[in-house]
Length: 90
Image (cartoon, rainbow, N blue to C red; front, side, top):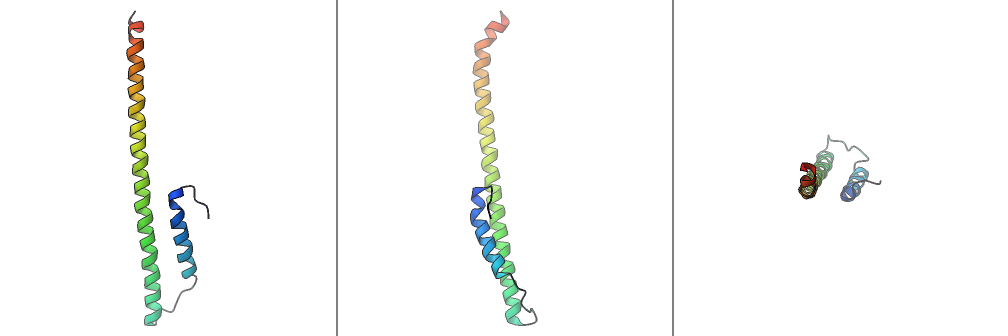
Protein backbone atom coordinates (compact mmCIF):
# COMPACT_ATOMS: atom_id res chain seq x y z
CA UNK A 1 0.00 0.00 0.00
CA UNK A 2 1.10 3.53 -0.71
CA UNK A 3 -0.14 6.41 1.37
CA UNK A 4 -0.04 10.02 0.26
CA UNK A 5 0.68 11.13 3.82
CA UNK A 6 4.19 9.95 4.66
CA UNK A 7 3.54 9.90 8.40
CA UNK A 8 0.88 7.22 7.90
CA UNK A 9 3.31 4.66 6.47
CA UNK A 10 3.94 2.97 9.80
CA UNK A 11 0.20 2.70 10.37
CA UNK A 12 -0.26 0.96 7.04
CA UNK A 13 2.41 -1.55 8.06
CA UNK A 14 0.70 -2.12 11.41
CA UNK A 15 -2.68 -2.43 9.70
CA UNK A 16 -1.29 -4.96 7.25
CA UNK A 17 0.15 -7.05 10.10
CA UNK A 18 -3.13 -6.85 12.01
CA UNK A 19 -5.08 -7.78 8.89
CA UNK A 20 -2.95 -10.91 8.51
CA UNK A 21 -3.69 -11.80 12.13
CA UNK A 22 -7.41 -11.20 11.62
CA UNK A 23 -7.76 -13.44 8.57
CA UNK A 24 -9.92 -15.87 10.57
CA UNK A 25 -12.61 -15.71 13.22
CA UNK A 26 -11.86 -18.01 16.15
CA UNK A 27 -14.68 -19.71 17.94
CA UNK A 28 -15.65 -17.37 20.73
CA UNK A 29 -17.40 -20.27 22.44
CA UNK A 30 -14.03 -21.18 23.92
CA UNK A 31 -12.08 -19.05 26.35
CA UNK A 32 -9.02 -19.18 24.10
CA UNK A 33 -10.99 -18.10 21.03
CA UNK A 34 -12.73 -15.34 22.94
CA UNK A 35 -9.41 -14.01 24.29
CA UNK A 36 -7.87 -14.11 20.79
CA UNK A 37 -10.75 -12.12 19.27
CA UNK A 38 -10.72 -9.70 22.17
CA UNK A 39 -6.95 -9.15 21.85
CA UNK A 40 -7.17 -8.53 18.08
CA UNK A 41 -10.02 -6.06 18.56
CA UNK A 42 -8.10 -4.21 21.30
CA UNK A 43 -4.91 -4.11 19.22
CA UNK A 44 -6.85 -2.75 16.26
CA UNK A 45 -8.48 -0.09 18.40
CA UNK A 46 -5.06 0.99 19.72
CA UNK A 47 -3.82 1.47 16.16
CA UNK A 48 -6.95 3.49 15.32
CA UNK A 49 -6.43 5.71 18.38
CA UNK A 50 -2.75 6.35 17.55
CA UNK A 51 -3.69 7.06 13.93
CA UNK A 52 -6.27 9.60 15.06
CA UNK A 53 -3.72 11.26 17.36
CA UNK A 54 -1.30 11.51 14.42
CA UNK A 55 -4.07 12.97 12.22
CA UNK A 56 -4.76 15.66 14.81
CA UNK A 57 -1.04 16.41 15.12
CA UNK A 58 -0.67 16.77 11.34
CA UNK A 59 -3.78 18.96 11.15
CA UNK A 60 -2.41 21.24 13.89
CA UNK A 61 0.88 21.57 12.04
CA UNK A 62 -1.05 22.59 8.93
CA UNK A 63 -3.13 25.13 10.89
CA UNK A 64 0.05 26.59 12.40
CA UNK A 65 1.73 26.75 8.99
CA UNK A 66 -1.34 28.45 7.47
CA UNK A 67 -1.36 31.05 10.26
CA UNK A 68 2.36 31.74 9.77
CA UNK A 69 1.80 32.01 6.02
CA UNK A 70 -1.09 34.47 6.48
CA UNK A 71 0.87 36.59 8.95
CA UNK A 72 3.94 36.77 6.72
CA UNK A 73 1.82 37.69 3.70
CA UNK A 74 0.06 40.45 5.66
CA UNK A 75 3.42 41.80 6.87
CA UNK A 76 4.76 42.04 3.32
CA UNK A 77 1.50 43.51 2.00
CA UNK A 78 1.69 46.18 4.71
CA UNK A 79 5.23 47.10 3.66
CA UNK A 80 4.14 47.37 0.03
CA UNK A 81 1.11 49.46 0.99
CA UNK A 82 3.30 51.78 3.07
CA UNK A 83 5.58 52.27 0.07
CA UNK A 84 2.85 53.02 -2.47
CA UNK A 85 0.40 54.98 -0.27
CA UNK A 86 2.13 58.34 -0.81
CA UNK A 87 1.81 57.79 -4.55
CA UNK A 88 -1.86 56.88 -4.26
CA UNK A 89 -2.52 60.02 -2.23
CA UNK A 90 -0.62 62.20 -4.73
